[in-house]
Length: 137
Image: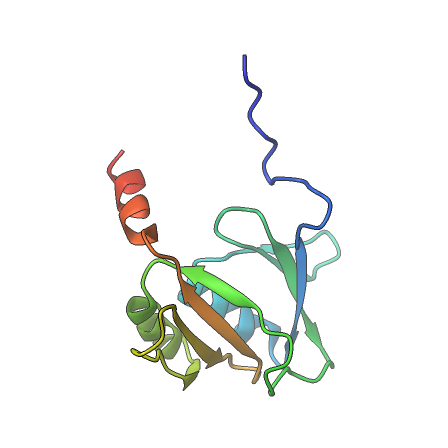
């Protein structure tokens, strides 16, 4: 009998926690929930935290820390459709600062969140089909 791995997958070297600078924590939480479907939760101490859509990465928003407004270390969020996600980012109050380049082999873009942080989206090939199959089950 095969034992399934624990969820989330615990492993040395795994990125597990992200602190995102925020001006207005509620506004940032709503943005990431609307644009990416992140689960928002309140901790016992009253702070606001998030979990990504598969429960593999969690984090929080940190007030008083300067936003990452110039791309240095970039965090990319995996998406099934860059076009659909770009629409969701804009509708949620974000801004696209580097659109998808049709001449690139990979499909990615950079966006600015409501606090001014620059992050990326990466369209994983085949993910839309996988998610459609999972939804049909």
